[in-house]
Image (cartoon, rainbow, N blue to C red; front, top):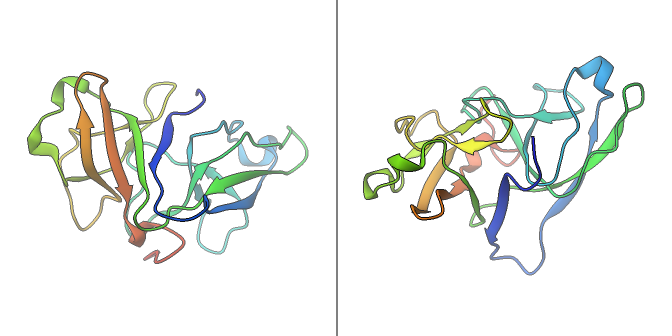
Length: 164
């Protein structure tokens, strides 16, 4: 994983909406350290920690996305820590690398997709095929020269309105 896999590109709010979340120690959770710019979710309904999203997340009825990390997490192998997370409020637009930059074309605009985490970095799987009723990211634009996708996080997969 690397820093700034996902970056904030448009924030309609007066300040960046950030909240601190607890991260479980790495021995208990088996997750890895979180770097700034990584998507995270609550590790289950009624759970108390955030963990990384996986390939195919976020999805309705499965994931409660907390947002995108604003800094690095502080947990150790034996002690819980914290991480600041930028909340995925409506209207915020994010940017991430496309999973396959050769697939960037006008036909993907407004498709609903998810993240891909099959490489060491989080990417936006623009070629996954749109599924309005399941996928939690909506493509708002792309830059084929840079290989990036701009997207919104749909409220139904977040703390605002999860369907879990």
